[in-house]
Length: 283
Image (cartoon, rainbow, N blue to C red; front, side, top):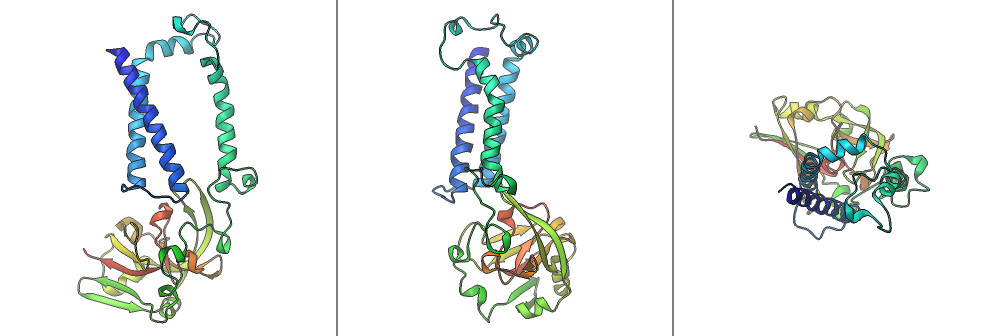
């Protein structure tokens, strides 16, 4: 039974790792041939992998403890089938793993660490982009090239039967807050920037929205799973959660969400909605 459980745990662990790798690469390349949510599914399969690893360690705990207490070159714990084997041995794998892990870090970390960008050949983002911040979805891809710069643009604030409509000029005339916050993408890259805009909490006061309630944030983009997102109440009440109008001292580039975008601390980049046109509280 234990042998079968060991084999099953290894099978599940390998399958989960392959799934995470393949879908992660596809997501980084912005290729979405799937119907499921990448974030939710990746998170769930991550727990499956952890569970499989825990089961495998539990089943093999006795030989693991014995191996950790002996010399790595001791062959006493080897299976009979290991004698005379060719290719990479388990000891060779253990010794090469730190080197391989280091190479992977160097090859990918340039998405976040500028000093490594020249050698990070597998980095999904070069760090380049309008106003010094990378872009995942452009205004063209979102279908907002015209609507985002239209003189008829309005930001609608809604709660119950109360609505307020604001132009970009109205937003610029409101008290502004500046904060240094990162865009942290689920693809594994991040970039810090200086954002200036209006606190979301201040925008909800004119429609009488209570403090600490969720807010639905709607984008001008025409389609996609993140056309509308939910901003939890604790984020909406945070003084650093802004409806940003400026990035690094300049008006937002259209690819960064002009005329206004959401930026909140400790929130995945995919949920930092761009081209915001409506904030609605239903509670």
